[in-house]
Amino acid sequence: MKYCTKLLVLLLIVFISCKPETKNDFNKTKSKDQELSKNQISKNGDDDFKSAPIDFLEEKYKNNGYSLPDYSPTFPTYSFSNEKLGIFSVNYIGKSEVIQNYWNVSNSKGFFSQFQDINQALGNSKLINDKVSQILDNKINEYYIVASFLPKESIAYFDDGSGDFELKKDAYTYFYIYENNKWVFIKKLLTNKIDKGGVSLYNDLLLNDKVEFSTPIPEKFLGQFEVSTKGELTNDGTGQTTYYFTITTNKIVLKAEAFRGDFLCEGNYKGVEKDNILEVYYNEKDDRCKQSKPNYLIKKDGDEYFIKGVGGEATFNEWIKLDKK
Image (cartoon, rainbow, N blue to C red):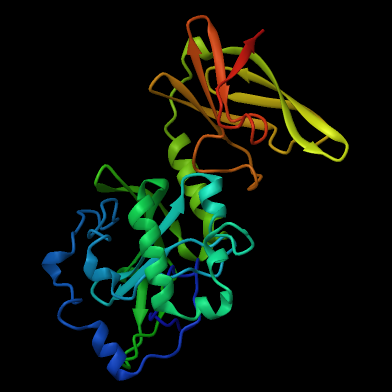
């Protein structure tokens, strides 16, 4: 199968419809300011790209501007391709559900609410690039920056000057996160085995990266805990949810009782201590419950425990007293 490299955002994960390149277009992508010399591409001894081969954030790779792939919610991204390097995209994933949902086309207070005609706006690549740039310039700390990279070793280009290609059978896509001013390897996946796309894929990758190397939970957090919170006001009255946490050395189990409402995210969680706070991450298969930031935070203050992340809008961002049984 042939693939078009122009405007490619993330191979086999995010596809954007693209027209065939003319010879002029293809020559432009190989212009002097975009060409990569062999000295510019880092080589790993094992050729396994556990270190990023380049700095994906260099300005010269942003010539095509930011775009928004066809997902709900979408997210800002830009891409670059070169026969001496391969293909990569840099993706900006919100650190919270609120930020991720800002890019949902149906969000009446989100990114798309500023446009009278959304389809017309999406067809204006310069407009989208400018609007996205303004947001990222002012709120970059609210986003994870994740690069997905398909090296040239995974690609077989057709010898017709078109830039079209096909994947090799053992093609891998490599993922990196930008932390502390450097690219950190997350994971590599067989490209044709990737069965998720969009924010769900990146939430999985980021979540797995956080919990994969989790250490035993400190003794001070072990035990059984309980907290009750009021939910949102409905036509039937105000709901209430009671959370029951059982924390052991290597696992956290959450059960809940909901009055006038449903609770979806029961089950197993992982705990990671950071700065004397226990970060609690969902560790089951329901994508509705997975997120790249902690689902809950637990801290001990003297002899008392507190939790953040429970309840509705009124309590979700507050530290609530957590009773130890």
